[in-house]
Length: 149
Image (cartoon, rainbow, N blue to C red; front, side, top):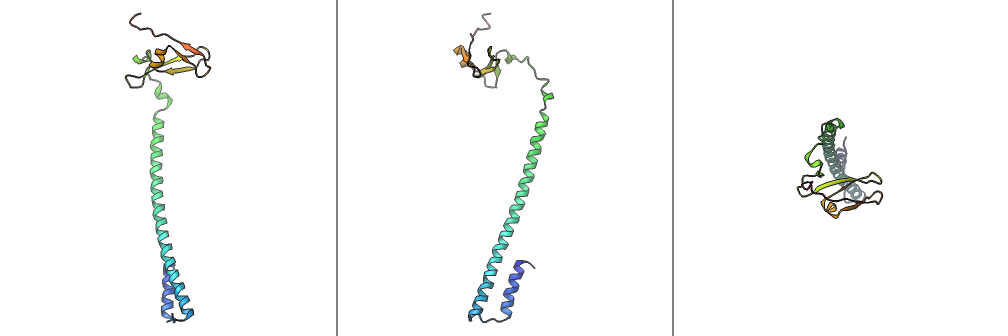
C-alpha cells in the first residue's frame, strides 16, 4: 500500500466511523487526517520531482559519455607517429613561424649561455636585442636584408 493509499484509507475510515468532528477528540483526529493528506501530496510531488531529476541526470551522463568518447577518439587520431611526415622545409621556416596572420611572424633564437629557445616577434627583432628570461643574458642580433646578400 502506497502512502497515498494509506492516507485515503484513514480519511475513509474516519468518515465511515461517523466521528463527531465537533468534539475535542473528533477535531483532533480530523486535523491529523487532513495533515496526513497534505503531507502525502507534498511527498508525492517530491518523489515525482526526484524521478524527473534522476532521469535528466541519466541523460546528461549519457551525453557526457558520448562527448568523452568523441574527445578520446580525437586524441587517438593525433599520436606521435602522425607527425613523422611534417615538412621541416616549409617556406616560412627560414623567416620564422607564421601563425596565419600575415602581419605577425614569430622568430626564435637560442640563448648562447643557457640554450633556452626564445620566441619573439618583428617588433623585438627591430629593437635588435632581447633578454633571456631563463638566465638574464642579453642577446643582440642585427637585421640583414636577404636581397642585399
